[in-house]
Length: 214
Image 1 (cartoon, rainbow, N blue to C red):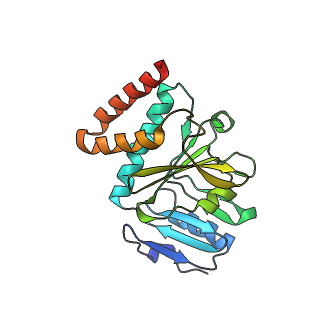
Image 2: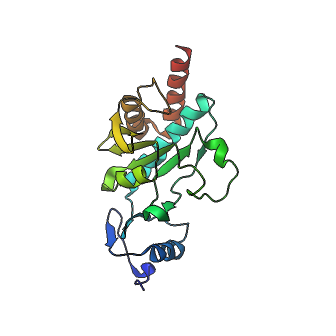
Image 3: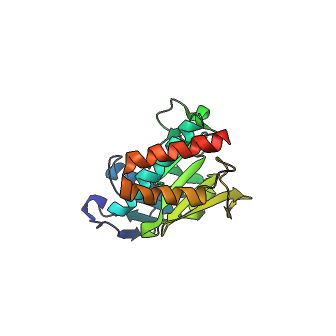
């Protein structure tokens, strides 16, 4: 049996790797860690990573998430954001907790559900990873068939779309086509650091309205 994970202290920005972790041990560790925690996990065929994010990581995650929510609201698209929900699939021995995720096209299929099971429920339409600590596991998202993965690293946004089971970098979002989000999202994130969150979101909503009208 594995050492109790509650006895493992992971400093912010650092990670712990546990090898040869069985699926049952992985499930036990998830139960022991609980749902209300800061640490993120990734499980890939016996390798378990436990990572504690930095404050910079959380700031970027919150603002980018707010921008995506504002975009969806202005476009009048129903969505459901599930934060760092654990997505896992025993048949592939893989699991991941995104920094943020959104059900958009498939929102109606999971509306009202309190628990999701990827054996029968679709994966999120969009997952967001903040790579301040370089922890994105693209292969796990590929295995779980998440259609779109955003990676934010070094103030740059990378959009990856799933094609034939593998991610291909794209200049356009599958969920928000014809919007220059690779340039715009980092711009408004940077703006939030000087003018504040609320002013930034108001400006961003105005920009979205301009795109709709044009």
